[in-house]
Image (cartoon, rainbow, N blue to C red; front, side):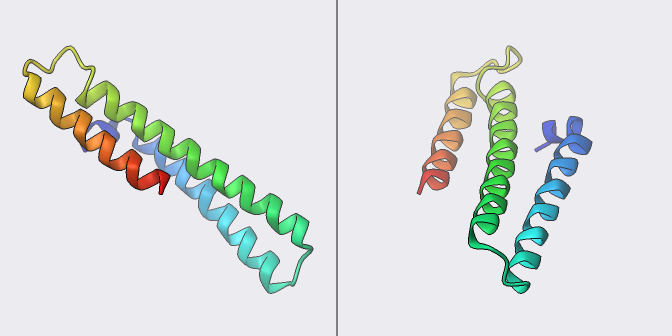
Length: 92
């Protein structure tokens, strides 16, 4: 996806924050931390993933569905179909 290259640094920074959150969950589990604290860490991690997903979905919509540069209905339809498939998978 070439359009993600424009936002590469921002997206990679999000991934690195999520990695840090997952590592914090791992450390808390290894240390047999309090379950409420672990649940907070998990909620933060999920929020980070949801934010990343929203960012990439938005980019996909702007580049593959709503872009004025797309001149064929078939290309728009393909972009929309890809998005529907992704969202269905994500919501399972």
